Image (cartoon, rainbow, N blue to C red; front, side, top):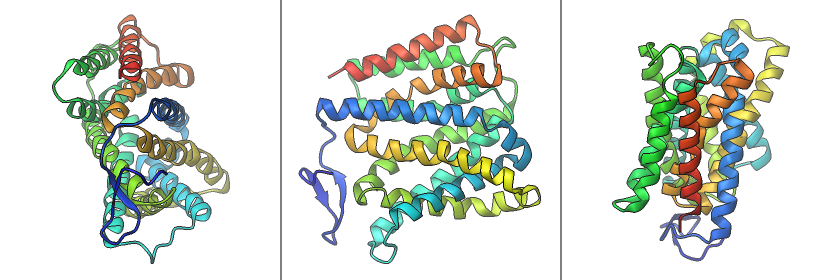
Length: 300
């Protein structure tokens, strides 16, 4: 990462925060592509998780995913845990805790409400980041267009959602996602390469252990562990790595609005993998969020 234009840590080590979120158009385009790949991995990984959630429960499946992802990345990156500053440790601890709570809430919601609806509610997190990041101006039109699409996606053939626990878990995931975006930006700037992600995933796995270990220990098998290893690569390892790199290349506001494609991809994954039908309104909502993402990407 180019060290020009960043504020160095008090220890003279890794950069902490960019002075400006202005990025070249090439970096923005690469970041947008990484966002798209991340969202695709998350949604199809989530859609393929139904059998694992049935077997281990939402908490157990989350813990196994985070644990495998943390082990894989630690083996590749080999973080220098005794060489980090207090500020770096604090940022990794905060991101890891938020990641664990966000992921557990997301998979708890999957058990209760359709995937497209869950992701529509979940998107309120990055939508809020985008809205606050843009400030007052004409570009607020893109979060508003995306918000209309999210509302349309939230209504299926049975009408509006009726599962209150599922909605509450989805809202908790949305709050976690908003905080996750801001913290990932900071951690990505504070560490070299993927060291910050490796540290935060290790923290997330530890935070999830008291919830996930009791739920999954009685159902563990070699076949099931092999399946969870593959799912851990789809979610969270690959998307979290892509998002950290993307947030080094683009402003958090642009990242947040690009995530408006997530509800559309969630509805598509639910349709293709879980046979969850899409209504005409949901298709219209998909069109709105795609339009918002394209507009945000092409806007100067």
